[in-house]
Length: 113
Length: 113
Image 1: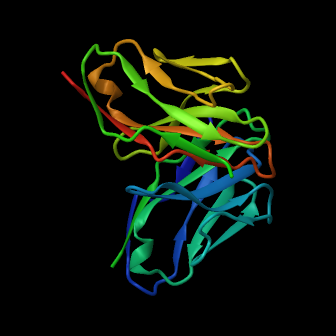
Image 2: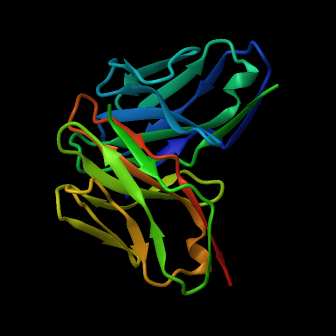
Image 3: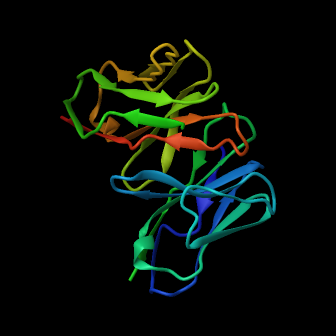
């Protein structure tokens, strides 16, 4: 089975800190995604990547950046964490093609204090 | 634009009751349709999918039929169990760059013993 592993289940960070969320997948998927999930707002796409060193903005990229130096790893960076970035962050991956569906990681619950 | 609308929850049922969660979509082109399930504290898991009109996806007793004429993909199960308690997300993926997926807001299901 494809596995998507997010490095932390829970994180607590201070306002203004630079935060790195790591995601690794083990099935050579081209496409990787970062979503945040908030009550009442569903899943919102932050950034995605369809190849190494390639990235595209999603619907809510402000305050975030990403890095994809290797195919299996897709990192989400909060440049200067703020309390409104407290959320559940979900990483997902898929192989090329619209028919396969996503494989998600278990999520990282980030609290910014 | 492209969107997914699903019925608001929570939905509360007794064990062995029949489940329907409604989902309709708006999309340009020919999307693939998915249902994902999220158990408490976890990421989303792909439950079932259908990639073209009139396809029926099924898994673990759940099923949904891709209805192009009504732009719907309703989730059904004949007899729910307590272990089905979760949040269910309807989603579509288009054959566009990066194969982004658009998710519905999610429907929480509670099943009582």
